[in-house]
Length: 333
Image (cartoon, rainbow, N blue to C red; front, side):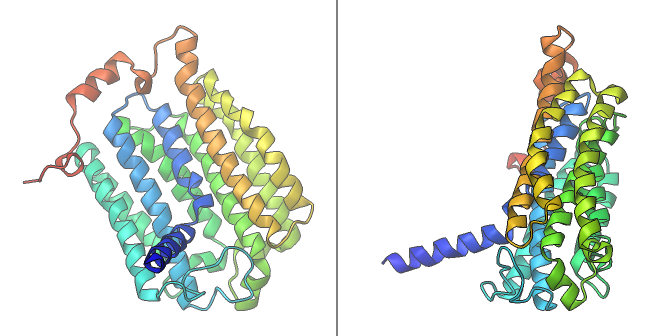
């Protein structure tokens, strides 16, 4: 009876591949940084924000797989990881259902945060959902007119980072904005190198991504500029009140060398898959190191510890406020 187990294993791998794990740091890193820069800390809100970001990222990836598959954008000539719908591994209806399920998880987690923080988060969530569906779906997908990088900068940069701080404090500290911009540039670089890899096939089917519009040479330079710009923003987090510890994010800079060298050196096709993965690792490293620096530097320097490490004011908030029933396993009345 090994065959059913093998089929189940292949199916799970197909869904995991369709979720595009190399892109998931774009969801995790901004939540870490935004939460670290907040004054207060409530653990369940952090978990909920992380769930929103991850489910939203997976939903966007499933939506891209679905819309590009049924729209004929993904063709057999495409280089890189296989696309589930275009390759026939997943039926379009099944991918559409998975996309909607991922977005439903994001919306449910966001709703719990809205109950605790404010209903303005519902408005933000609906706007982001509409933007996600319009990325590669609808009559005029804006990913096909060169606006994909703008979408990821706003969504996985500004909204994810500033939003993660906002759900803790109901306000956004000044330092969160340069941090959010750095996260946004790194997320945009992920998309740029992905689209640089797909440039020949995208151009052939009329998908005018930013890489197609810029042309190969300028797209390569734009990718390098995005990474350099993101790292240049890290000191601004300190200048904006994030503390000297935020400079720890610069320790990730050596991870930018290899992908920049490869992209500027003319890597193409499958070689750019390695650059994409390296870009994801760079974003995660910048996020983790910045977060660790912000949280640990004050404690090591004898200053008041941040709330996420047990600062007294936020500790009281954390003890008093329980998670909503939806997250705690209870039933809402």
